[in-house]
Length: 401
Image (cartoon, rainbow, N blue to C red; front, side, top):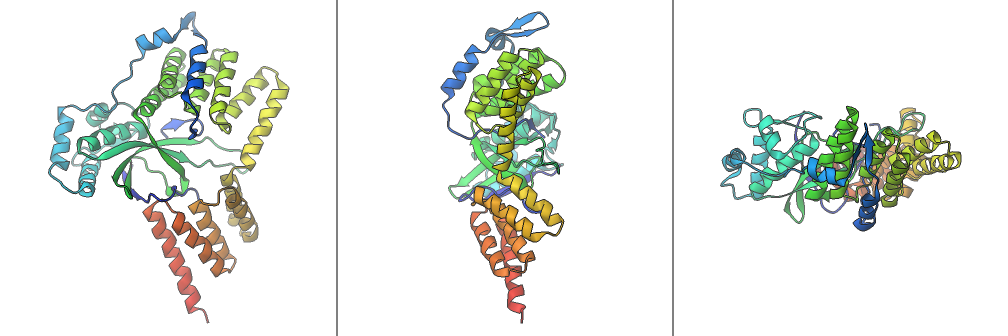
């Protein structure tokens, strides 16, 4: 799996999915709002003990059985590595590129992608395999040792739909970001997403990264039917980051597996209190209420899911893509205009709309939308792509009789 170092502009959000158109963390989008942690912590404190195979687990068991590791701790070998490949380089940019080449190069460290290879920076360094989160642990730790301003970054991945209009599972993704100046930063990724799939990003704190570490362990335990371990690590994740809506969804799933339905409902509703459009929480409530025969509540959340879909700009863009595949450019334009009404500053939506106008034989309108996309693009390579298309259309217009 190719590693990637990507320069980013700082004036706009990264663009996302486009016309005609990659697994580290699972279940739903992360709420990026600014709700206080206090209500969520209060809810966590009232969650019942976890009953499993005749045992009741409580918060006291978490403190005793689930320690949180230092994800960024270095040892002597790691410090020597940084000194060898990044020491004595004055330029921050050159230091970053040298460190990245050393981590990714087969002749040096050669870290490879493995979706199941979690762990701390130290574990990744010596194992030489990582998933997206554990690679971020490694890179942030080594970059900071090299004197670089490195942080975790959350990347929102755009949802996609089937031809029946049902959304497929949403991937969540973490990488590292290095700030070289107020106007220049680089994203560092072991399993890079196509820029068209990125809906946005934000910086994560170390506590958030620790929470995601426990969440990954919990979800792996859930897949192996180790429900006690799943509960312990999921609650520990929420103790560290109670504001993460998708962590509450996962806790609800664990409770539902042991038929603790009231606790599951509380967890799902807390996720929706943090993020009213948390799709996985809505879906899980639908399943729960149907299971319990609570038809009125089931119908309510079914309607909310449909409303979410219709208010999501990327759903309308997906409809536009389907029309474009059929060569129906006027319908594609209408769907993309609906998408832009909901998300007018999205660079990829603007660019795709420009491409549609080009297909409709309206080059001036195409240039207008592509110019807007250039100004909104969040990655330099996206700007370069848009400029190349802008110049190609301009040349065609100039050559026309």
